[in-house]
Every structure is written in C-alpha cells, then in structure tokens.
Length: 261
Image (cartoon, rainbow, N blue to C red):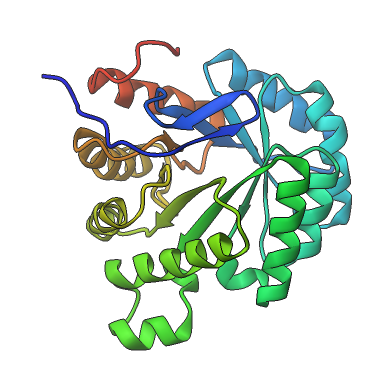
C-alpha cells in the first residue's frame, strides 16, 4: 500500500522544503529559556542528533527575540520563532535571523499589526505559519458556529489566509490545533479541502509520554494515511528529544520516512 500525498504549494523554512511533494518534515520546540543561548543551542544540537529538521523557540520578550541571532549562528537547524500577542516581537525575531515565524493572527492584534509582520517576513524572506488554536478563535466566528467546532477553526484559518493574501503574501503554512483528537482530524480534513497551502500537523496539549503519544499518533496517523500533512510535531510534556523519536516511529510505520533514531 502506498499513501497518496495531498498536492500542495511548497515553501522553505531555511533549507528545508515543506509541501509540494517534499518528505514530511519533523519539528520540535525547545523547552529552554530562549534568552539562555547556551542551553537553547545545546538542546537544539541534541534534537538535530536524533533527526529533528526544524526547531521552534519561544519568543516571550525582546531579549528572547534578540537572542535568536546568536542561536541561529550556532544552530544546525532552521529556527522558527513562536510569537503570541506582540507583533513587535515577530518583527524583532526576523530582524535577528529567525527563518520562520509562527503567529496566531487572532491574538497578534489589528490588521495593521499583522501587516507589519507580513512586511517584515517579505523583507527577510521568512515563511509564516498561521497557527489557529481552539482556545483563541474570534468571537464572531464562535458565535456563527456555536463554539470552537472544526468548521469554526477552519473559518478562522481561512480568514487569516485571505488577510495575508490580501497583503500579497503567500509564503505560509497552516495549522489548526485542538486537544480533541476527533475535532483535530475533522478540522484538518476540511482545511485540506479548502486551501492548497502546506499543513503543519499537531495536537495541542497532548500531554505526557503515553497520553501524548497515543493522542498524537491517532490523530496524525489518520491524517497522514489520507495524504494530509507536510510537517509535524509530536507535542509531549517531556524532553523534546522524545518528540522526535515518536515522530519517526509514526512516519516509519506509515512508510513515509525511513530516517531518524
């Protein structure tokens, strides 16, 4: 049996292709204080050693944004900055070398603030992940759909896609995350029918090793079997190295990847 991958556009995160027939890329996120460059770089190198291909770091303040320059200079992997609420942090992270940005446009602020992020991404050649979370869907969409349903999550994602497209920006990938496995599967299926951008798969708040592995493997396994998904992160509340091990076990089981630990 061979899985027929969903055709998508292709974007680059650093030197790693996402979508467009490229292998499903494996990501993780550091759990260090990003301002601690030495600890963050050490963890990134451990992740790279077990097959991680892209790494995300939390940018909670301006010092963390500035630290990205030193982290990128020493990192063997492309570095994505994870941004919440403050467009200025996104811009600063890109100015200091972030090769990708993850934003939730629903909490990044006004249209003008989103435009600031888009303009910086275009200027620095950076890709953007639109990350919609079931806990931060816009009120009008929640009201229209009766809560954070799969259709509501997709409506939020599509709204932000159209916003970025309106700014002439298309170098993006999308994620829709819920802690509910069935809602995650339904939302990604609907999103895959609606847009042709690459999709980042994940289950939010998946949990510790056993519950996190089970929830992520069920949701992501179903989607990957249907050809949906271009990059993924197994979210575990443990050493992020374990995320990479689980990711490659899943991809090997589906005959999508053979490398890794």
